[in-house]
Amino acid sequence: MAAGEEEGAAARTESESEAAVEELRSFKDLGVTDVLCEACDQLGWKVPTKIQVEAIPVALQGRDVIGLAETGSGKTGAFALPILQALLETPQRLFALVLTPTRELAFQISEQFEALGSSIGVQTTVIVGGIDTMSQSLALAKKPHVIIATPGRLVDHLENTKGFNLRALKFLVMDEADRILNMDFETEVDKILKVIPRDRKTFLFSATMTKKVQKLQRAALKNPVKCAVSSKYQTVEKLQQYYIFIPSKFKDSYLVYILNELAGNSFMIFCSTCNNTQRTALLLRNLGFTAIPLHGQMSQNKRLGSLNKFKAKARSILLATDVASRGLDIPHVDVVINFDIPTHSKDYIHRVGRTARAGRSGKSITFVTQYDVELFQRIEHLIGKKLPAFPMQEEEVMMLTERVAEAQRIARMELREQGEKKRSRNDNDDDTEEAIGVRNKVAGGKKKKRKAF
Image 1 (cartoon, rainbow, N blue to C red):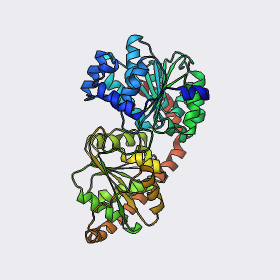
Image 2: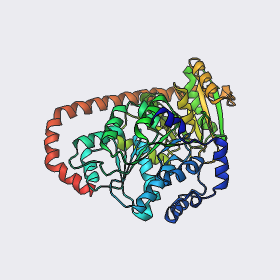
Image 3: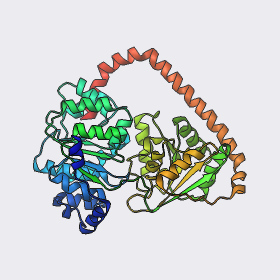
Image 4: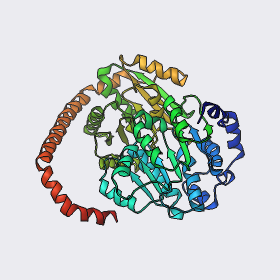
């Protein structure tokens, strides 16, 4: 899209958006068909969110949409409902493609599509890394209505899966587009844009409008309508935000103190590395907390297992890297703890956005050590407010240090053992790789086929 057209892309102001929300009290008012309104009702979606009010009527008119909205604002509904409505009007296989940056987000979007489209028999397939490509090829051969994919794995299938193409595609959605591009998927996105029809509807949703997103918008969208419901970085009003200034060496003790003080809540604790996430999870387990990790070095099955246990409230503490900071909708998170302060200030917004969702209240607590002061000041500058200190009893924290030190020692030993097991497993895998490959060709193919069907 040319620069002049870009300026001409329709954009509504925040006050107009709020007025529209007041006027439109239901999905029916937005033009959503009865069967999908019932599905929204069953999901507990009583009133459309701001981004849904902005984007759905425009999308139903057949226009391309750029949706700019903060995390937790109902973006999935804003693109899923128009796609399902169009599918009802003209049923077709391989109808829509949703590109997303992370595997967990892909599974979550698939769940929402299936929940909204359950009464009309919508079939979806998730195509992400970390899962066997053969079973994915079989799923694609069945030609689902909607494919939800991470760009890398989708390009693999487009290049290597015989008979699979997207030449009949009618809708393309790029969700969390800023993050897709930040994760260096530009080459893959370019390849996908080259092999899908130009005559399609495109929805681009992003929390931020970066230069890369603007470039993608010009390449992929035709005369789009811009729906921006939040132009500045902000956190929701019902979120109570605090910080704690602590010496770096006592971080673990302060964490245990807070978990005890706020016992009965569910927590998401963000760490900066996979190793620290695993270590802290082991430490907390040794102290009797029901904690589970979620990070990029875990297998896909284990990642989904952790997420499902936490969603089902079988565990009350989820320790995660930024793999879980965006897009994931876990309704019951009461408290977010930034155990390691995020390096990028914008990641703070996404992390604390895991709580106080859909009108509920929530708390966030950020640990600030002597090394983090500058990063913390940047966060305060970004959100435009000074955070209050979380009330603490220092002497009670110090009483925990002995027990925590013992748990740290055991956690370090367990972490070492896990590393050694992994290494020996890898060595064994190298020795027997050829034999396993032959055996899988003979026996595995049949087994996988039965499982997939």
